[in-house]
Length: 458
Image (cartoon, rainbow, N blue to C red; front, top):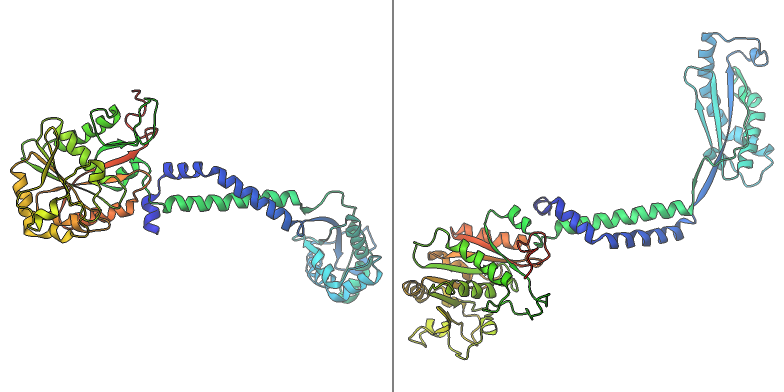
C-alpha cells in the first residue's frame, strides 16, 4: 500500500479528488456537527474563577506588623514554608473544616480538591489560591471561606510561619473557561470535515485508476502513441457518434487520433518490412478490439496492405463491431478443418481473419507451430499485421508472440484502467524481452485539460 501511495501521489490528482469531493466533505462536517450538538449538550459547561493571594512570613510575630520588612533570608525561608501550606490547604483535614462553615450545599472534600488549584510565585513569599465553579457566586463564597480559615488553621497545623491576605477574592464577572453547544458544533464540523478529508485523500491516493494523461507519463517509460477521444454521446455536431468505429463519416477528432497513432507507429519503421502489432490491454472493456480494427483501417486508408487477425479465442467481439456472415475462422484453420486461410476483405486494402463464431477457450491453438507458421506466411503477403489478442492481465496468450518479431501496443482507458494492472502486464512482457512500442490512451474526455483538440471546433 505504501508503494501505491508513493507512486500515486500527485498534487494535481489529489486536488482534483478533493475538489470533486468537497460537497461530501461539507455534508460530513454538518452531519458530525449535528450529532455532536445532540451528544455534546450533556458535556457543555461554563466555569468561573475566584482567586485570593496570600503573603507568607517566616516569623509568625510579623504577620500583623505591617512595618516589618522581611530580609532575603526570611523570604527564602517563607518560600520553603509555602510548599507545606499548599499541601495542607488541599488536604482532607482542612477542606473538611471549610465544608463545615461553608454556607453552601452539595460540596464534598473530593469536589473541592478538584475545584481548587494553587500557584507559587518563584523566589517570593507569595502564593495564590484559585477556586473554580460553574456559579460565580459560589466560587467567591468558597474563596472567602478559605480566606477566613486558612491564615489561622494552616499555620496551626504546620507549626511554622504565618501568612496574611495580600489580595482578597472578587466576584468573577466573565467565565474563566466554557464549552457551549455552539462550540461543540464547530468542533464537530471541523472533526467531520477532517475525517472526510482524510477518507477522500486516502481514497484518492489508493485509487490507481488512470484519469489523466500525466499519470501514464509519470508511471511508465513508454511513449503514448495517441489519444482516442470519448465520443459516445451526441455533441454539437448534431450527428450520432455512439459508434467509435472508424469510417469515412467519422468525426475529425476520431480520424485525427488514428492519424497520430499511425504516424507514430510508422516513424522509423518504413524500411523494416512487415510489422506485426499485438494489441492487448490489462482487462476487458478497455477498447483493444476497436482500436485494433481502427488502427488497421487507418493504415489501409493510406494504401498499406493490412491484415487484421482476431486471435481473441477467449471472448471475441470483432463480429459485433464489423459483422460478417462467414462462421468459419482462425480456429478452423489452425485445427486443419480449413485448408485455406479464411481471409475476408473488409474494404480498401484491409483483410480480416475472424476468430470462429462459436469458438471458446481454444487458446492452446496460439501456441502451436502452425500458428507461428501462419504468422510467418502472412508477413510475406502484407505490409502491416494487427493482432487482437486476449487481455494480458487475465490471460497469458499474448505472451506467445514474444517468439516472433511482434511489437506490443497496450490500450488503456481513462477512468477504467488501473495502473497497477497495466504495470503488471508491462512487467510480464519486459521480463520475456518483448518490445512494447507504445500506449494508446483511449476514451479521453474531450473536455479534459490533457486533450490535444480540447479547443477545436468542428
